[in-house]
Length: 230
Figure 1: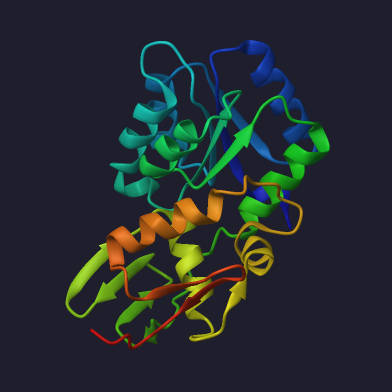
Figure 2: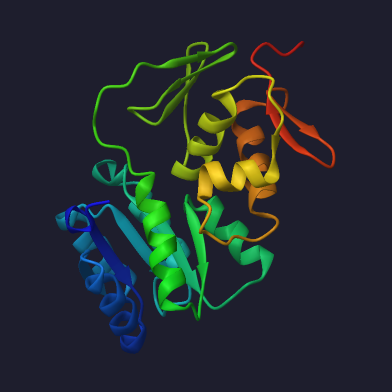
């Protein structure tokens, strides 16, 4: 991975956190910018079009959740990855972040080597703008280039991580993917995420594409059914 081609925007109201994370990412060769609040983050993001935004949840004024909502409304940032950074580990905080359109969730404090691994895993999933042929998955059609799902004539836009999860399941219809295979294929082997992360993303996918496409195999994992019975 050529770190020098990636722009990362760090957003946190604590200067020492910005300095710590910024130092470790710059040492790896990433181009790092910082903002101390949500308003500044939105202004900088419009100008810089970062590949990755690491966004603190707990900030005064406009918090990270609200900031993420605003960032997601900017068309030019549709390909930017957003990872929440927070000391809060409660499930509701993760759910709120995913509902806002966040792609990942990083709990602090975090060790430098783990931080770098998480960032590398996230950026490996940043797709260049090559034209990719849409995949026909039976009832759904997935356009990887535009990060769009089509259900017949209905266009469904998904947050990046939900899209990548569906893309992964659709890559081999009817195959039962174990939870470990999904973690490895979607989040990366060197990424540590909570046990409920997959379940949360599956729930959000089912809300958007319908309940019938993704089947739960109890005690094992999930599979995609391209032509489910009505």
